[in-house]
Image (tube, rainbow, N blue to C red; front, side, top):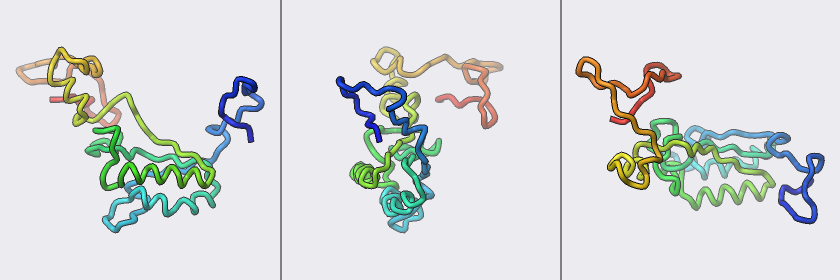
Amino acid sequence: MPSLEYSPSSSPTPSTLNKWWKESSVYQVYPASFCDSNGDGIGDIQGIISKLDHIKNLGADIVWLNPVFASPQVDMGYDISDYYAIYPPYGTLQDLDQLAAEIHAREMKLVLDLVVNHTSDQHKWFQASRALTDNEYRDWYIWRKPVFRDGERHPPNNWRSYFGGTVPHPR
């Protein structure tokens, strides 16, 4: 199997480059409902580790892990409040390191589902951006003044949410 690593003496060509993301079988895991290792009713990283042999035996080459980072869980974990911590019911960073090592020991790959173009309103960057109009984080988010009609505050746009109503905005 060709390597994805670049070597100046042997540049990969389209015919020799392993397109693992196109040629692999992926097993997607939503941690909260996958496997509960400690009996608290919530799936966790240790539970995922306990099922890796099963996933490998199914023929998976890649484990795609839905968000596991710290989050208030308003948006199923996509509303990350700390990119340097794991959502506590799922485990710890050490658990995630162990998961990665166990996946790699089985010659599989790990893909983390991570959306970096938005955060939770509880993230420290958002809180700093919201606090003052002249700080380093202010331009990390898009801020618009609200629209007032008949004395009532409305969102600053007319965007419609896919799930109904208008797109939420901070109050």
